[in-house]
Image (cartoon, rainbow, N blue to C red; front, side, top):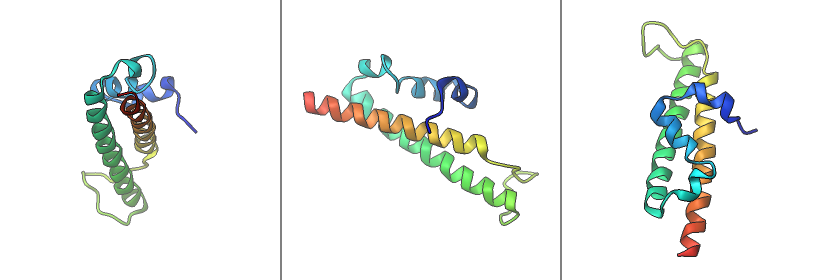
Length: 104
């Protein structure tokens, strides 16, 4: 199930939100092909980063991994939601890039 913009906004830094918000129309239709390629790569990188972080946090919460900081993670719900939003943004960027490549 997709996460709404309203629920997603508090999870992100300003720069992350700018990129995610550009994955929805009408902003998406204004992005050039070259920028779309960059955004696909960046969204993939951030999705992978937050998936890995969620995996680390889940292990810490179960007591199976040593904590990365002074106290172990208590949960990873927000990190998982962030990874999901980046995954959805990646799909939108890829779909738009495919459209632009077919046009050109």
